[in-house]
Length: 411
Image 1 (cartoon, rainbow, N blue to C red):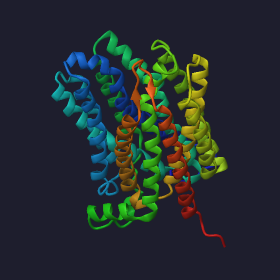
Image 2: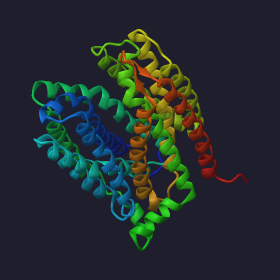
Image 3: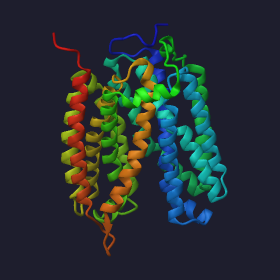
């Protein structure tokens, strides 16, 4: 078998295809675990006799635990075989998910979400480090596009199935099913994936603290971290209020709301890999620029919408997500070339931590911008659109500088 790190022409080898499938599945499991809490809130709160503030604490506990975990792990992320590191944190994530399914009290569920966040928050960064190690730069756009479809798949498959299990049994059922499915995925990784340890052949720094310090003080890394924060800020300002805006401002019924997510997710599953191919073919900066322009246009349209029909909203949502993914996928492909071989784990761990913390801060800021009128309509939602346009333009400037810093010097 050829080495998976070899630069291959357009088709992937059989091993590379299996690796992408495994990485996408792990990403799907982590994203679904995080997203399940919100739709299950209506069931969990009365079952545990807790209020919205306590439920909000349960939801945010995962994000903050994940952010802390990513930062603390960064110093050690490049000192081990990436496969073993992935399996260690994934095992903790599965056990945390099982604990969520067995929790009977608010305190137990809160601790379970903290444990799940501590382990699950690192998995995404290890997945990206492995993808970078095993695939040449000219293939990474397609790889990132396939991995990103996990977000859409969690909308299309995970959330409806989770709600179905909850409605027919209890809110414990989705977490127990996820733990069982996650265990099967972990066993597949343990059996099929080869060790990922080429970075260990390069001399390591003496201490984990020195490794972390050099990661967070490298100017080029700081530029990439700033882009991560800006991209995350935009998404987390819009998403928490999108369902309320859709129902109260656009006149779409709660019955039709799952249809919006279903169709949008299905379209994203198909467009994600296409955007990845375009990234490899036309260049990361060019696709990111087009995605930024499309995102700005669609965000302004979306945040200024009035009552519309269901087909119109679905069309706007689909194009909006195409714009969002046309930024995320090429940036991930670009960011994969930023860290050196011996700092990929720490770079991605810090990046994941910044993503979690930035998302939490963005949600708080959006909550102070948006208000609710007496009729239930959201007020000042257009202001969020303007803020997102500003962050998009700044991010485009920083990505241009980052791309320029990575380009080989002109002879």
